[in-house]
Amino acid sequence: MPRVFGFIKDQRTNLPVPKPPTNIADATYIVTGANSGFGLECTKHLFRMDAKRVIMAARSRCKGEAALTAIRRETSRPNVGEVWELDLTSPDSVEAFAKRVRTLDRLDALIANAGVVMANFQMAEGIEMSLLVNVVSTMLLAFRTLPKLQESARKFGVQTHNTIVTSNSALESEMEHNIDSLQGDVFDGLSKEKSFKTMVQYPNTKLLEILAVRQLASLLPVSEFGVIVNAVNPGFCYSELDRNVGTMAKVGITVMRVLLARTAEEGSRNLLQAAFAGPESHGAYCSECQVKERDVPAWITNDVGKTTQKRVWLDLLKRLDTIGHSIDIKALTTK
Image (cartoon, rainbow, N blue to C red):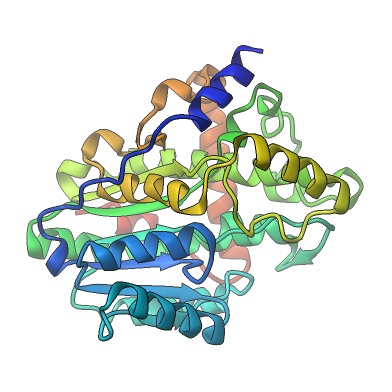
């Protein structure tokens, strides 16, 4: 019950619109999943805050362009913004996107918001689809954009951000042994149709994200590399994330939304806070527009949790290598 009361309290917390960095008029931001939900609202804020360049990553160029047109009209900034195609179901699409990122003169933050909830079991690239989208492709994008973030931090004397959007559902007590109890490879263990349940798999993917973020941050001291890596929870909001869930789950979510949900705009404030936050957020969990490491349970931070974290990390790198998208961690973490 205390966790339930804490969730209700969090949902009713008044979230401020974060104050942008003083250099935002010179800054470049990438927002994935930018044509709807949190990504759309986050993008609108960046326009209103006078960010110099905002790149909207969207799976559908048509939907992305429609969203950009609306944002330009709403914010009276007709010459700002661009849409780049990004399909997280395809690692090759991630690589093509990252190749374009390398042509940028600077990158101040990647806000990796795009994700999926799968109602039905589906395999892609040898693993379950939401594992591919939410974890493998999302982290591949994080890895591939790191050099540009590092370069920008060094060249412009700023701290850049690699912000991954996660969920507080990953921190629930029933999640404690979902990963460490698996036999063999983590991604294989979570890709079995007979044990697939939508409202378990989604938190699993978000837990894997948190563990990967914490491990990556541990290898990249901000004082040396200038890049802040963090994970952010937008909270329970009205969004399109549940568009793929089954009828019964959707009914339950609808009822909860009526009682407790934030708007997508309110949720997007959390994304901005994490993308503007200081070194205290490095490797941390952010929620309610603040660093909330106190919400991270001991089973993640203790010795068992750290062992699981390293296991997830190694399995992630092995998976990327297996599908032909190897990561040179030594190169990324050597100054």
